[in-house]
Amino acid sequence: MDPALNDRRREDVWEALSDAFIDNEVNYEFIARRVAGVARADLEHIFFTEVAPECAFNVFAVIPPVWAAFDRKGLAECIRDMQARNRRSVLARLKHRVAVAFYRVCFRSYWEQIEAELERKGA
Image (cartoon, rainbow, N blue to C red; front, side, top):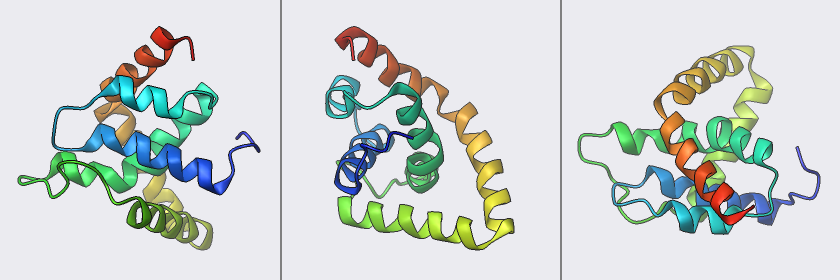
């Protein structure tokens, strides 16, 4: 992970990537613009291991609660809570790894669209 990715910038990235999970038309170009400058490998890791586990529910919901944007503060709090649980519990880490493997399959096309926009922008 890039050590230059401070807490504020990481929250910016979480917020931007969470837009892929809204129940509305997703603007992948806008997401790519907001995360430009962050290493691609770091973005992919953050997308699948940090953002997807906290935002995927919106895609799977019959009536998605988030239409326009995830609450930045709430999202950051949820991701940090998940990370803390994973540090404390072997079972939580194992469940997280299984979930991430599932999200890598389910949301591969989302990531590919973000990646395509990053390529287009030369980021």
